Amino acid sequence: MQRRPLLSLFSLFVLWRPHAQAATPPPLWLANTYQANTDLRDFWVSEKFDGVRGYWDGQQLLTRGGTVLRPPAWFTQGWPDTPFEGELWAGRGQFTMAVSVIQQTQAVNADWQKLRFMVFDLPKHPGSFTERVQAYKTLVAALDLAWVEAVQQTEVASAAALKQLLSDKVNAGAEGLMLHRASATYKSGRSSDQLKVKTHEDAEARVIAPLPGTGHYAGQTGALMVETPQGQRFKLGTGLRNHDRQTPPAIGEWVTYRYRGLTDKGLPRFASFLRIQPDLEKRP
Image 1 (cartoon, rainbow, N blue to C red):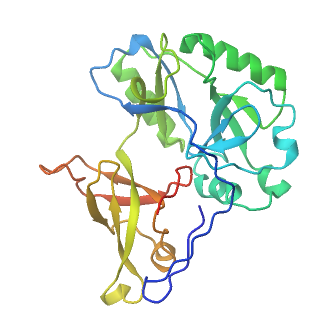
Image 2: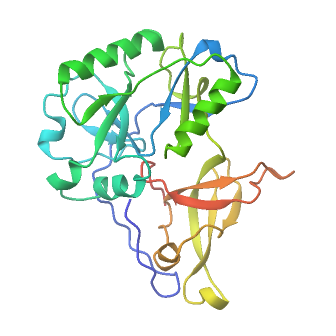
């Protein structure tokens, strides 16, 4: 979602929605965090792409939060009525570009040509993940479109091999890795059959209010008051860049933050703002 300008000392905000909102968000399979004792022999591993999650429901392209996207007609021309999902990706380190493209109210060919749709699952396929990998590769091959790619899956034999692969990918600009249990069927909600592997912990929180800054940040946003999905509230100021302070995320928008473990009260330690999360539904 687009940010709102900072007005009247943070007291006046105008809601704006660039796309139509679906009735309900798609029932996506979400990942838990990798733990060192995981038996990696049961999993496929792939790159975690730093983009915006997309869900093709057979007729229209949705974000994780249910927002209906409006790409140019050519982008989804010929796509089947079979649902599939992936990442709208502009390349390693180009998350901001991907977001700027999907936030447009009118599709611009030149901008959408910068994106690829990295297909990684078939939500309605009844088989195991291994079977779904073969099925989505077949689907992508049949589409034969340069901007639709099948995510490659590999195997790792040990935690040491996974650590090395993570290091190699991150050093090359990747966000991290994803693990999928080979025998797992698709299911909505979070599951340990799907795991994210990163060099840091991160999570999402909803913006409750921008808090005015003092001193060097007088007249700007000093911090954001945010709320986790569990209802815990805390201030998030570290990591905000100049443009974040001048035009802060809107109330109701979701943001991603990094942190290093939890306090005894369950709050994130050393939380640092990372970015707006545009593929979750804005709430008042």
